[in-house]
Amino acid sequence: MKEIAEQFQLKSEIGSIRPLKIGFINDSFIVESKDPADEWYFLQRINHNIFKNVPGLQQNISIVTDHLRMKLAERGVEGLERRVLQIIPAKDGKLFYQDDAGNYWRVYVHIKNTKSYDTINPELAYKAGVAFGDFQAMLSDVPLDNMIETIPNFHNMEFRLEEFREAVKNNAAGRLAQTQWMVDEIEKRADEMCIPERLHREGKLPKRINHCDTKVNNMLFDDNDEPICIVDLDTVMPGFVLSDFGDFMRTAANTGAEDDVNLEKIGVNIEIFKAYTRGYLEKATFLTPSELGNLAFGAKLLSYMQTVRFFTDYLNGDTYYKIQHEEHNWQRTLAQFELLQSQEKNYDLMQQIVFENSNG
Image 1 (cartoon, rainbow, N blue to C red):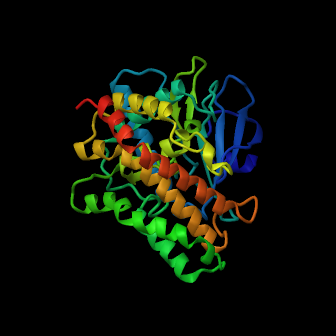
Image 2: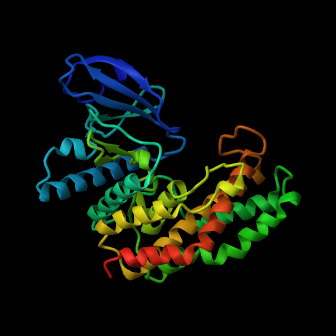
Image 3: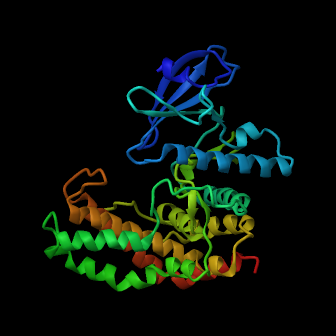
């Protein structure tokens, strides 16, 4: 592992390297310096089976982090090395290194003395809203010309429905007969859920730089519980802001678990929804009326999309998501659909919360 780390332009002498058990996609390591006062580094093997265009992926991250640094410097913010991820180039100047086995590697400067959270409460939800709102606001003027989709069609509902209909047609696992009612539920909402793509084609809904994994554990906090840096930038790419807003609400503003067996536990956590919305809209002052009007819809859309994705995988015979038992993807499908129905029942309230917190 030391030989890999030495392929990068490190300022510190390497002491030890230890693996980190974080994330499901990339393999991560901490590179500690011989002198503890020197820079430490965060070494990752990039999963090129998921991120097939690694140069494009790294270029996205470079564009975003450079722009964030510029914006924060304009505000007079100090300690930028703790506020934005810093890529360390390889010795050949590239933003990654490819080893003889074909693996891709990258290095960031490790941000010391930080913590992250896996659980959510209204106070953290508010802080997350402020952080992600500010993140999008700072990036709202970045041209998208040089940005790629690191996972093509990731939040494209029309594409997800094409995959779903193919799965229904093939019925590869022979599970269609007993789940036809869910097919009907998905199809009766399909037209509504493709509204963002249609609005974009009509020039009424812009694409901007999205994080595409807006979870509270993708933020680093300092010792005073203040968010200082947004991390996990692999899926930073063009998209609709409603998707980022909705993805946070799908995961955080749910009173149950993503795969809860007890569907009665599942519903919209209105207090979390309120807190995140308040924080987000304090910073996201760049939104057009169309973007603002579709924020609450984003919560419904992402829950619907995840229902479709889990169900598609179930019909295909569980080929994409890791499962813990044979019916796990069906259980996930039911849980996400339950959340969607709760969001539908609370939609007017969710819209009202957005309206009350908007500057318009």
